[in-house]
Structure formats: C-alpha cells, structure tokens
Length: 162
Image 1 (cartoon, rainbow, N blue to C red):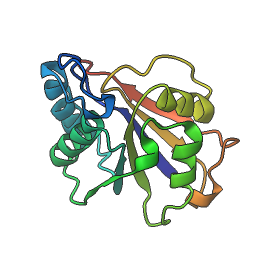
Image 2 (spheres, helix red, strand yellow; image 1 turned 45 degrees about the vertical axis):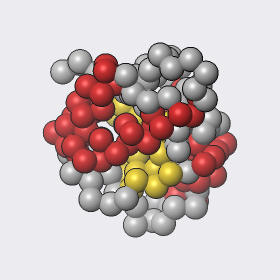
Image 3 (cartoon, helix red, strand yellow; image 1 turned 180 degrees about the vertical axis):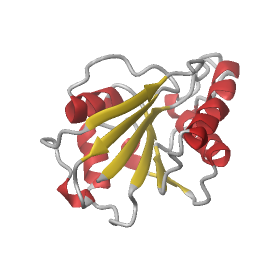
Image 4 (cartoon, rainbow, N blue to C red; image 1 turned 60 degrees about the vertical axis):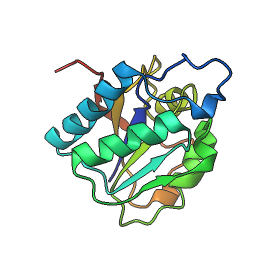
C-alpha cells in the first residue's frame, strides 16, 4: 500500500504586473495557509517520506513551509516537469520512485493536480489553493502506478476546516 498526498500550492499573489507566472509568490493568505497545512499533516500523522514540488516559486514556498511545519526532515525535491504539470508528468515521476518511499507528497498546480486526483479516485471537483488530498493506492511498488490505477480518497482538507 502506498499513500499519495496531493497538495495544490497556497494562494499566490497577482500584484506584480508583468512578473512571469512561475515567479509569483504567496500572498498574505497563502502565507497563512501553508503553515496551517503543515500543522494539519503533522496532526494527522501523515508526514511524508518524500516531498516533490513544482519549481514555481509559489509551489516551492508552499512545500518548504509545509515540510518544516509537518516535521519532514528531508529535502524538498523540485521537479521541472511539475510546472505546469499534467497527470502523465506526475505519474512518470512517481513511477520511478524507490519503494522505500511509502508516503509521498506532490505540490503543484491545477488543472494537472485536479485531473490526477480525478484519474486516481474518480472524484471530479475543484482542488482550491492549499487543499490537501490523501489517496491510498493498493500497490506495492511505485512502478505499478499508471493511468488505470484506482485509489481510495481517504481524506481531503481545505484551509480553515477542522
């Protein structure tokens, strides 16, 4: 059994006109959301074995804060294919992970994360900023994960929810 934690980056700023999309930072709400997610991950006992993030500033910043607040002691690995990130990009990277990683967190963007969640759980809907989804996958090896794998949505948490 493998666990996949899917996290959309926290709320980002649109204030700086002309700033490239991948360089947008977290706004004040996003700066509150990211630590909240990390604390929730820790409280739920879901600290990942590995965190993989889009290199976009808003995703990277979210991942670093969540890692710190949840007690993760590894490095946040930046994956260039996660920006903007299609389901096939996430699946390809996950399929090459070592089996020692039982619980993996992805931090990225919509629509790719929403599409990945729908593909794995048949749950269609909006993955708003800083929303965390826990997907249980009935596989023993990451290389078994593909577009036909169906997992169970074990939980979904939005900022501000208890």
